[in-house]
Amino acid sequence: MFEGFTLERVDVGEAVLRVRHGGSGPPVLLLHGHPRTHATWHRVAPLLARSHTVVCPDLRGYGESSKPATTDDHAPYSKRAMAADCLALMRALGHRRFAVAGHDRGSYVALRTALDHPAAVTALAVLDSVPIGEALARCDARFAAAWWHWFFFGQTAKRAERVISADPDAWYGGGPEQMGEEAYADYRRAIHDPATVLAMMEDYRAGLGPDRRHDDEDRRAGRRVTCPTLVLWATDDDLGELYGDVLAVWRPWAADLRGHPFPSGHHMAEDNPEALAAELLAFLAGGG
Image (cartoon, rainbow, N blue to C red; front, side):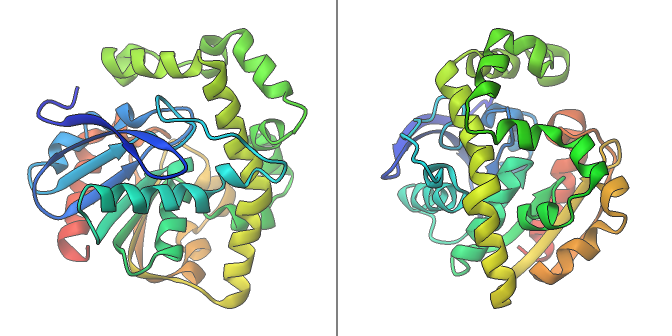
């Protein structure tokens, strides 16, 4: 995987992130979702690296990045904390300004990076998500039935960790045919590590607590993403069914917004990597 990329660990203050980076040109940060690691980008990153410097970390708590101790309010796993990691990482690698693309949970970190650090982010791409605050404000029976795992993972009694760790392969599924042999092996190491499972659940607990609060505070204050923003949602996932006009959900959040459905299942970088790379490159060339 990632031929020509450098693999290292970077101390960003509260955490040490495992990161691969390579290529040359304008920098772009790629953020994975749950329960993946940075390896989910292994088919997309080399295509972007032909014209960009590409940085792919494991988010704090995920993969082989460190797992900071949590607190009662779950703030160490808030997207604000993860966004601060991203800013420190990019500065450590010499990038003061950069584009960021995030998928699933990584999209929340990408959004928070653009909102909290607007001077640093040149372009934002969010893949298969709406803001956490929007999802929870609009939560109805359909959402609760389809996304029940948010509320199961968010329970503080740690039942989810026990259930998942009893048989991680059965819980999460996936296979080498979809992910690639090396990426699948990396993913399995992660989901079989109880410390990683605990940290991933803390990500969801933060989602129901500080992350929602931060989103709600931004909405009340009228804060918006000021850089060009691309939203893609998978045709074979449920955002369209839940929200209809997905861009309408995003419009209050971004001043310069574009997007459309994308032909893929939820894991876009694995299901349709060439098309995703082409979308990102066109977006970055036009606005980022």
